[in-house]
Image (cartoon, rainbow, N blue to C red; front, side, top):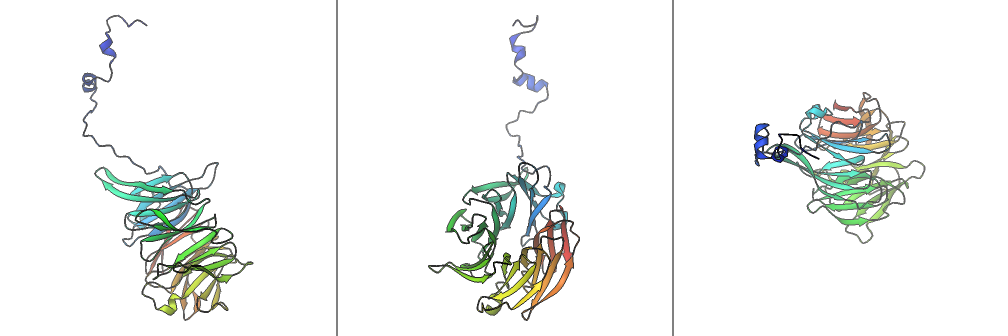
Length: 352
């Protein structure tokens, strides 16, 4: 095709340095471009919340409606700012729902996804601003990851899945160092690392069993609780690293009936004490790290409870029903402050 009269071929070189200068286009090779991974919005279903020792908050959200499920991770340096998308430090979008996550240290995160992936994320501060990036993603689980916990040493982490397996991860190498396949005969509902022994942990499953795991043994699992009619939905050790050995033998089971049952690994004959927390299945239990007699409870309900376990008796300490949908995440900021999130897209602060 002929060019218009009076127009040379050189005029068509729109990428020439001369034309860039005329158009005031910056061409400096030193220009920095920030790759912002922060999604445009927080998904409605807030599935977990966790707080590190500096008081910084990690929030996991999922979009559980529509044809495709997605998720996102949000990091805030002040718990009062969540879930405002404009006030987060940095965010990260994932291609699946996010069931649970933990801080491995101040800037390293481990999350479990509904697609079965386990992903290690890192928060870095570049000259252009903070950035959350994926260090490693491993697709070892064959079904949704339901729970993620870090052990007392901080060197390893545990993941439980609907594929009925539990994996232990090396936090430095991002590799699975222990595979416990068919740990339960149905999906894993919860895991809890021992407060002072890295080799011990508890797991609960929809098969009605709570198992005590001792990784030092050739056959590491032993059943310490069983109820096929009122199945365990969550489990946690009581106490912390400074607790006495007697208190460290106690554990709490959250059941489908909404009951929490206090048990002891040294005496499996009967429940020490039971307390009707909710009238619906429980979902999470969170022990206060500095006041280990206080345990936060949530489930398929709008209520948040804190119970006090003293002298082997469970008493109600606090109750709140400000949420408008199921409460899914509970985490202690300090000895007197509890943070919760739910499927109503709210993050609430409770002063105990």
